Every structure is written in C-alpha cells, then in structure tokens.
Image 1 (tube, one colour):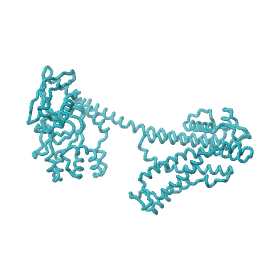
Image 2: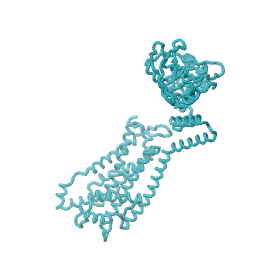
Image 3: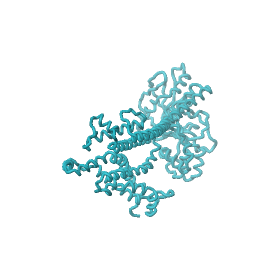
Amino acid sequence: MKFIILHYSPFKAVWDWIILLLVLYTAVFTPYSAAFLLNEDEIRMKLNRDAATRLKNAETSKADPLVIIDLLVDIMFIADILINFRTTFLQNGEVASDPQLIAKHYVKGWFLIDAIAAIPFDLLLFGSGTSDTMTITGVLKTARLLRLLRVLRRIEQFAEYGAAVLLLLMVSFTLIGHWLACIFYAIANMERPHLKAKVGWLDNLAQTLNEPYLPNDTTSGPSIRTKYLTALYFTFTSLTSIGFGNVAPNTNAEKIFSIFAMLLGSLLSAAIFGNVSSIMLRLYQGTEEYNEKTESIKEFINFHHLPKSLANRLQESFQHTWSYTNGIDMMSVLKGFPECLQADICLHLNRNLLNNAAAFKNASEGCLRVLSMKFRSTHAPPGDTLIHPGDILHSIYFIASGSIEISKDDIVMAILGKHDIFGGDIRDKGPEGKALYTVRPLSYCDINKIDIAELKEILRTYPEFAGDFLLKFQLTFDLEKGTLAQIKTKGKVEDETLRFIRQKRPRLQCKRRNEINDGNSRRKSLLSVQSCYAIQPKQIPSIYIRGRTASRQRLVQNVTLSPIGDDQVTFMSIW
C-alpha cells in the first residue's frame, strides 16, 4: 500500500525524536515569549506609531530569529499531523495498515491536541497591530504546551532506568520553575502601571539597581535578562522552600502566586525525594541481599561449628558464584516463561559450548534446543573439591573456563583446561560408575554439566544424531577408568606447557599437602600433560619448572620424561 509508514520504521523513530526536541523548545520559549517578549513587541509597535521615533526604530530593528523558528515549528507540527494520518499502529497485537482505520484511530486519539498545538496563531492574526491582539496571540501560543502530554507517554519507557528517571525529574523541576518565573513576571508587569504605590518586586528591583521606570520612556527599567533571572531566582527559592527574602512578593496578586508556588514546590519535593529514595534503594538492593546472605552463611558456620578450612571453602564458593551470577538464579527466572522461549534462551547461553564440541556439530536445531535445556552451570573457586573418590558419576562435565587438577593419592594425574571434558563414559551400558580420582580447580572455573541419564534419553529420541555423537564424543579424562584421551598437537607447545605448569597452586591445597608431607624433604608427583597440549617425546626440550608453595618458592630441575602410552608423555619431577 502506497504512502503508509510503519510505526517501527527508522524514519518514524528519527521523526519522533525531532518532534520531541521541537516540543521541548516550545515548552521553554513559548512561555518566555508570551511573558517577556510580548511587552517588547508592544513597545516596538508604539514607537512605530510615532513619526519621530519610527525612522530611528527602523534603523535599529532587525529580523527576530524566534519568529522564523516559530514559523518552522508550526510547519513541522502540521507535517507531523499528516504523517500520523499515514502511520500504522498496533491493534490487538497486529499491525493495522488500512488508511481509514488509521485515520479513525488518530482522530479518536491525539488529533485534537496535535491540531490545537499546530495552529499558526502568528499567521492568522498577522497584520492586526493592536496590543490586545498581540496579547491574545501570546496566550493562544501556549496551547503548544499540550504536546507535552505526548512526551509523557514516551518518557514512560525510561522509567526502569534510575539515572534516566533522576535526570527527567531534574529537567521537569527546572521546566516548572521556568514557567512559574514567566507567570511571576507577567503578574508584576500587568499590575505595575495600575499600582498607586510602587511596591511591586519590579519597582524594588529597579530601585535596587538604580534603573528606575520613567513615565514617558517605555524602554526604561532593568533589562529583560535581569528581570528573568530575578524571577527565576525567586521561583526556585519558593519551590525549594529556602526563601532568602531579598526578592519578596508585596502585592496581593504576587502573594497569592507565592502561596501557589510553595504548595507546588512541596509536592514536587516530595515526588523527587520519593523517586530518589526508590532509585537509591534499587541501587543498594543487591548489596543488601549479598550482605544478608553472607551473614546467613556466617551464622550457619558458627551454629554447626564447621572447621576453618571447610568454612573458607563455603564462603569462597558463595562469593565466586555471586560474582558470576549477581545473585540471579537462571532457572528460577526462566521458570515463568513459555518452554519455547526457555529453549531459545538456553540455546543462546550454551551456544559456545555446542559449537566448540565436535560431537554436537551435526545435531539438528531441535536436538540442540533440547540439549541446551539439560545443561547446568557450576562455578567453583580454586582449592574446592568438585568430585571425591567414590562419588557416583551422574554427569559429564564440560570446562567453559579455568583449569582443573585430577589427582589420586596426592599424585597429580592430569591438568585439564578450557573445552576439555571429564566425568563418566556415556557408552557404558551398566550402572553408573564411581569416580576413582579427586577433581579440584586450579583457578576460578565455570563448568557446564549434563546428566548422563538425560543425555541417553535424548540420544534415544534422536537416533539419527546418536550414531554420529557416539562416534565423535570423547572424554578428555575418564574418572572411572583413568584413561586420558590422545589428541593431536596444536602447536605452540612450549608456551602452553609453561603456562599451565606455572599456575599457582591453591592455598588450601598447599596447606593440606604441607601437613601431610611435613618432615619429608622430597616428594614425587606425576604431572600428565593436558590433553589439548599433548606432546610427542621428541618435542620436549630441557626446561625448568618453577613451583610455588604457601611458604617458599623452589626451583625444580632434572625433569625426566616417562612415557605412559603410545605417544603420551608426562613429567616426572622431584620437588
């Protein structure tokens, strides 16, 4: 359909922001023009009537840029009405693009407000040079402020952002103060010629600045800038309930206005302070929840008299999990959404895991969605124990980041890193096996795991994927059988080897081992090369391994190579 604009199109978004800026311009300059500049126009008109001052005024007068800008604003507002008559809208969740339906919807909605705000009163009353006409024009132009009602609807989408709400509150407070300053000046300027005693704030200001109003000189008195700043200063002191008193209302009209300004200021202050308190509460809500859970853990430790080592592990595990999740439980959040949406979100969260594992390469989209729903994330600090010897191997573990140590009887059997897989073998048809090794993180680790029984059920559901998966799937380290996978060299052997060898050992682990080996000056450890850094024997250079303990640092030499398989190599070193 021709000449129909989609309400979500980039053009409509840019156009709405332009109109928003013009509305803000109108909100600032229309009251200012009606209160301050209208009097200047009347003075200029009186000067033009006098033959003696007409020529002088013609030489000094220049084109007013505000008149041109107001004309452009009127044109833009009229164009906005025409655009709104051709812009789609949502009706019962569907996009309505029928022109008649769009016109009816707009006429019943914002058309009346937009039409009143777009009337070019300056052009309609152009040529009528009476002061009453100019006053009426200035008052009617304030009808443009009705468009602010549409701005409020757009501002609602920023209500969830604390900084944006605070900024909007300050802008609103400043804008209301500006409007009140214009009204305060208009009241004083209208009643000043009719006062028998010169007691108004404008006369007091003129007397203080020694710039008095002269009876036959319409240009006498303080400048517009001075009068505006003084009026704005008074309204802000009234709205904030400060009231210095150097600018005070003296006439009845000024006092009535001041009472209204004080009442309005109390309401605005209450609204601003209430919103600021709400924003600060939201900012510190996470901190309060963290402190509350920390105190609960400390009370739990004290109540059950946990040993210091176990208490430290518990606290460090909580701190690491909180830093990773910020206290948000993903499963509890997803629970309230439809299952299809849950699958899409889980697929996005586990996309890297599914892409990097060769066994999942040929899985269909539906199979990947089901798999992603079954993965669970685990976060572990260094020194913690993920798996103890004798634990039942319910799951298969995929390392997303960090490195772990697999040991047996205090002998390190393997160091695994990112993208490595360990756990039980899914090919075993018997009951779930038991772990023969201890698994501890060497650094902060993020691990994804999937239950073996659930994975087998998925393979039975997708038999076309099962064959390819079982062919390509390979555990880096089988915790039940103790086998280490053989993977081809990836290059950069020396750098990668030194990187994992120089890892700092966790303090808890070092303390425990120092207690076990107290009095022993020599200790043997078997370090198996990480699977993704598998090395051929001829590629091993003569290197020095620098080991670190909790008490001191020692240089390890005399590295010996001891093959454990066909091409698999380990380091046998004396520490």
